[in-house]
Image 1 (spheres, rainbow, N blue to C red):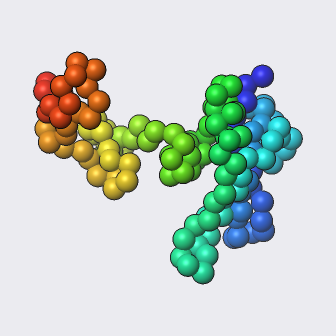
Image 2: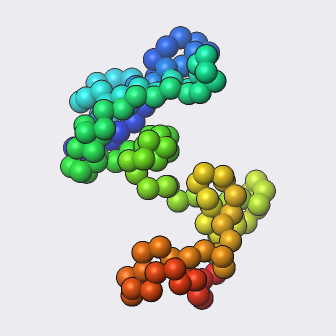
Length: 134
């Protein structure tokens, strides 16, 4: 049984509300689930921000036993600080060739490889510029 962490849609028309659920990958989107792990409200509140709540210990447990997050859940868990940033590629235009430069997940802009520095270098040379990457 493959377990996925995914969003189940609640709310009414034009006012979505989602719950993060651990569910069998074969069950329907709003169907049977194993556990509710949190919620996500994409509509802005009075302060203008989106609201979400997570049970961090349970999410970490399900990830540790091999549950696979869906793409939207992966982005939510990145914003919460649980997962590293998902790999992103920039597209020049629809149907065109992809730009293979890595993307900064916070700004969405391509990273300049030449100006990056290595923070944790396995060779022990911290702060060395990246060479030969393109």
